[in-house]
View 1: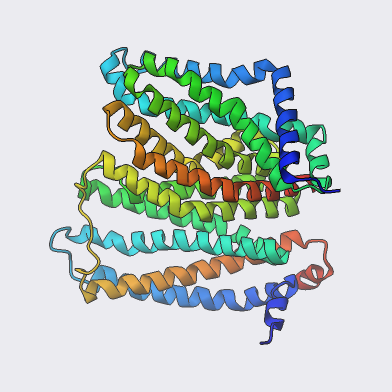
View 2 (view 1 turned 180 degrees about the vertical axis):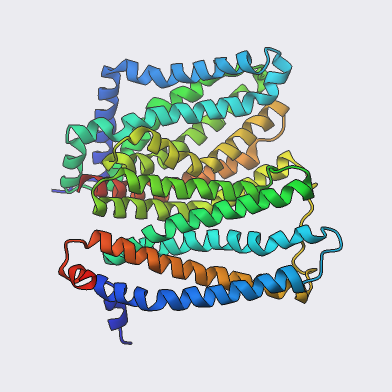
Length: 226
Length: 244
């Protein structure tokens, strides 16, 4: 029997949230990783806040991208190993919807917490307090786009040996637009300029991602399960 | 309309024979075009009033850059055909395109750097075109890496096909974002060749070189395709017939 897509999506979200909170360390690791990466920059570049401020958008976004890559490994891996994804594919429900729900949950558990912890790193990098909320908004929206893109590569690498490095190799070139517009938004926020133009672009990428990425991810997962 | 030609393209022995017949013709025509274009470009064309002889790098650089994109599109179209009509031959063709496309990208970047040193005074600038070309190279690496990492050839075909198509959707967005990025960070101080100002003596060898490179690409794809078909169909009876 086919139940409503919304009900199925809610079940998937609930299940993933419950499972995730049983392994809190898995949730904390990407955040810790992000904080450590952000800490390394002052140590290697300069401790001067005025110069760190110039580098801050790059540091924050590269940190966010690397940490999202780290979190991507958890997106499908466990469910592929214990056969859950196979059950999803065989359930007769839309795999696209279920994966979209999984991806949104993944963002709730990695992208959003990252955007919310980023202010600590940002303040330490000399980002002015006025710019913090704009930066959080750009990281949250960009992180959503990164999760959607990442779902495709995570699906594609299901059948691969040495998935980890390959996952980065596939995801990084594809995420360049998100990185460019995201860092631009953060830079504008720090300079006190309007962040709307790059935010619209990030939004457009996210909308395109919502439209196409779940389809591609579902195709990729099906191939991986064959 | 008669579609038998399309169905025949799905048969490895037929395509193998086709590739064997046509590869020498494409290769010969490519050699002819490239030799004439080289003569036209290196000897007949006048030297540029600003760049002197260094501008002649364009005869290798620009066709390589065009072919790097054309090879990617060809690969993605072949991959899509393979995915939609479940044609193994199309997947083999896509696999054959990738390394050549990657080499064209390397050639475009390499000749660009060699030209940049005397012209711009540096091997590398973060110009949007250079950056986009570099990202294209990474996409090729991703495609080949994915293909190499999946053991089951059919899974590798399909997964890499999905990646090639995702890449095609993304390439214009990447290109656009890189243009946006550059307009913020760096004013255009670089000297650039304006196409409309190029006179005909300089232009025809360039166009002929492009044709030559495209023919060369076709020839190498056909040769690689034959090797790929032999490797994949090594258990099939027609291969034993061909190799006997």
